[in-house]
Structures are given as C-alpha cells and as structure tokens.
Image (tube, rainbow, N blue to C red; front, side, top):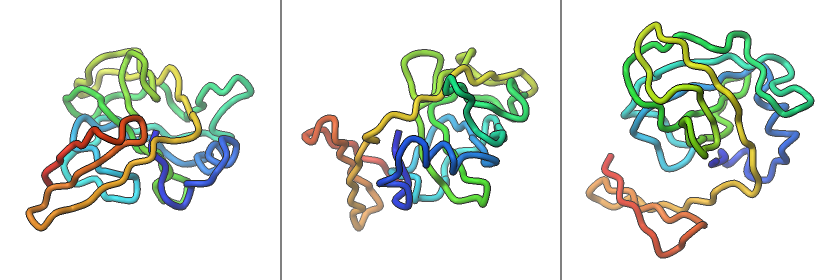
Length: 154
C-alpha cells in the first residue's frame, strides 16, 4: 500500500473514514510512483463505490455493489482508492493471492463480475522515493529494499 502525501501520517481509522463514500478503481498496468501522480497509462478494469462506513466491524470492505461487472479486459495488478471528494488516498497491489486487495478472480473480461474479498490497510505504508530524469525515466526505491531500483518510462 502506498499512501497519498495528504494521508502519510494517517491512522488506519482515518484512512477507513476517508474512504467512506469514495471509490476503489482496479487497473492492470502502468502504476504511477505514488497516489499523488495521475493515472496515465492504464484504463479502469472495474470500479467499486464504498459504502459509509467503508468497512464493517470485522474490517471487511463494504461496497454499494460487490461483485461489480468488469469494464474492460485485463489482469488486475493495482488499485487506487479515492475519498468521497475525489482525492486519491492510496494505491494498493491487487490479485487473487497475497496482495493488499484480494479478488476472487485472476482476470477481467467485460461484463464478468469481479468480487473484492478483502482489503488490507497495513501501516506503515510502503515508502517510495522517486526521481525523474531528463529522459522521462522514473527511478523508484522502496523502503523494503533501498538497494533495489526500478526504472519506469513515462
């Protein structure tokens, strides 16, 4: 999970409160370095609207509709959560396995229902530093391994 700068010091309860009435959008590829960067290289696979409150007492996500039909073809790889006002709150890894957002399916096909099984809001969030070169490459370093650098063109 990567938090937007506005939520960098937020608690789990504050993040959950921010998501109430907001939305969760699934994407396949082209994950931006942080939630503060726009989505430019990916189209939405599916969109969920959080209920208010966004999580029940067992920390299960509550949506207005779950499952929801996929809008396009792809393999969900990441998701962005937005507050009710539209501000980005967090980016999550997505998939059927050990990820932040767990789904009941591996891929998306238009009209096929995708169900969110769970969302893990774990703190501290992943801390990513990035630097954009003059050639458009973004070098990212995560807090899990400061020696690992990922180059992303875009």
